[in-house]
Image (cartoon, rainbow, N blue to C red; front, side, top):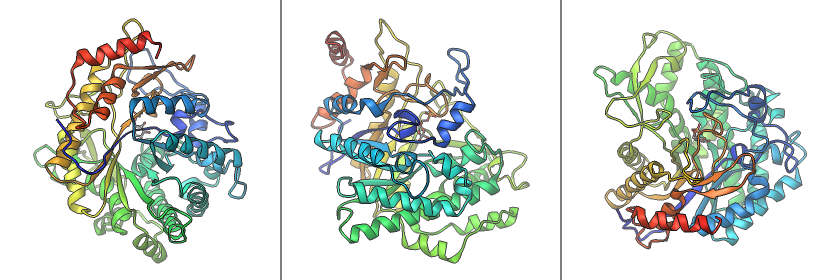
Length: 485
Ligand code: BGP
């Protein structure tokens, strides 16, 4: 399919700091909760297993030392956008007073290098990596953290606000909080604590609103560029029931997983239904009038959306009876859907449905797909990765984007594949590979996969035709392999 679009469309790729850069002590960075958690829970399952693997992230893909060669590879591929996050613990390693100039310089260097190579930086302020010193003060369960985050946001916007056009406050607030308070899979490792989840979510929203306020103030003063925008990345939807009698489950999941996030960020208010639900189950959140005012006056300006899979839900026997509102539903995989090896449902069609919903609810806001990707074991043949499944996944999702733009006139302005190169995966460590570029985690040598040449061909074709001729792509791939790329 071709992209019939006269407006610019960014073809990007994404990463996050804790997953790609290498851990503590680089550029004065101290530990984040991910450094701390992965060291304490180190676990490698049997080869080929899809169990959660947890490894050290001290080196990961070492983007910190390799960003120049990585960006050169992005340019050669033709990327026009690169999404990455800034590590809060690198900017403020010890406390809220001392800014680490070495860390500040690192991100200036990365941003300058991207711009020099014609790649638009898309900068996330927070991708789950709370500095340990902040967590020691109870992280996002402490109202004070909203002020610490505001201070951090001040520095980021003042430093990079003239160079960066698109900022995101948070990545996937819902998954960050589920990891910490529902699944117990990240520090402080609480399980099934919907009450703490609600409290933390509220402070996260307040922190974002404070950051948006700083951003807009600095922009009005000309410190941040007049053309820069502030968005936020959410995920979790779209939710479906697909089962007789489970409409209630769908409505519930949509409320606690989507509306509780989208509405405060883009409408500046919580859905009333959420207050009713909290009331009913006795969840008491410290929401003050001044918080509500802050949310109302500081909404985000574009929608960042991470889409991997839709969610199909069914009630459990706990539905409606416990305060653990995240335990009311279970997820299901309807048999008609294909999945990845980690059982993530593949459905570009339902991605389009959601884009239509966003655009109906927020016609005035541009949308950027900030993540979409295919995790695989990436078996090799003679040292080469022929990742045709990944290519087909991308093709189908790009076609979904084109349908959204061509047929429904949706204001979708970019697609960022997750991830540019192989990096640490929170749910499956280093064995779940996403990249266009293989990283050998021992030698750190980078090698392009077949999908690299697919995406390159789409970007460089003036009509961005997503169809491909496998033989031509293979020829380019094999030639480049001979050339040592
Ligand atoms: C998103 C996160 C990313 C990324 C991706 C894939 O939720 O924003 O950080 O990792 O999911 O998930 P995983 O690596 O666990 O497969």
